[in-house]
Amino acid sequence: MSKNYFTQETEDAIVAYNLSEDFNEKSRIYNDRIHYAFFKLTQNIIHTFKFYYTEVENIEDLQHEIMIFLLSKIHLYHHSRSIQDRLEKIIIKEFKEKYTLNFTNYTNDSPTVTQSQIDQFISKLNVSEKCMDKLKKLTPPKAYSYFGTITKRWLILYNDNNYKKRVNSVPVSTIEEDNGHSYVIEENNSPSDKLSHNDKISLFTDLYVEYCTNNIYTLFPKEADAKIADAILELFRKRDNLEIFNKKALYIYIREMIDAKTPKITKIADRLYIIFKKGYIFYLENGYIKF
Image (cartoon, rainbow, N blue to C red; front, side, top):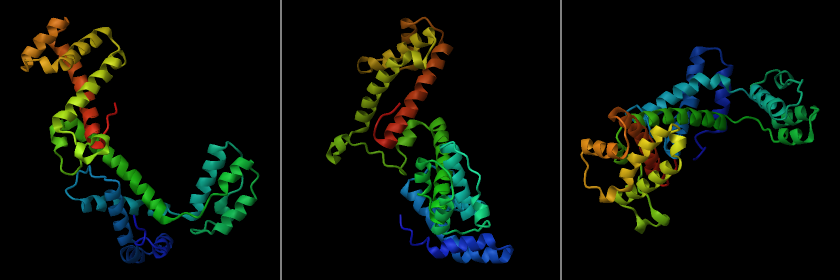
């Protein structure tokens, strides 16, 4: 990911934007010196990390949402306060040591600081050697890193929420056919050894049944529920020799194995389906199986 679009001029512009109290000047600084950097930053992060689960019609609409978010957080980018926050996290939260000096007071709450200022301040602190070693690694904040980090955090939350909605509302077959993702799963990393759809689902089903069987009392703590689940899983175990696929006939088949009413069977089957669906989508997305 190239940083050429996010230069020192961009860093300076963000500081100038925060220092200005004139709305027109702030608008001019943003449009002329910050907007393009934010646009490229969001674009690169979306494509580099493949944040493609979105509710908007195109990526630029998603970028617009993120850029509004960044603009709402731009005032939080402040060198002295960022260093003060890091000092507190390291000394107080991480090392549980006392901390009385204040970096923002030391710099008169300056929006920018130098490495020399940080080093001089740290040298005055009375902390353990291990804590001091960690503090010596502190450097002046960089806007590129700061805004890149909060963009990724925003997108992770946004992406996960939309992915969960998709998992809960869209059939597996639809997600599998989604052209926005690569679902080619290769065995032994060999392009010539690609698995067909039937091979993939057969492999997954075997491991799914094994997982549910081995964890059946964890998934279904009540013995009655576990017995029903095992009866349903038996259909998967015998699927190659099973000649009936009519829903009603399958329910009768299950009731022959276990004395349970239809609503109860349906409830357990739904829970097993959720495990199957989430696991299979993960398999399609990542190329390996994880429950």
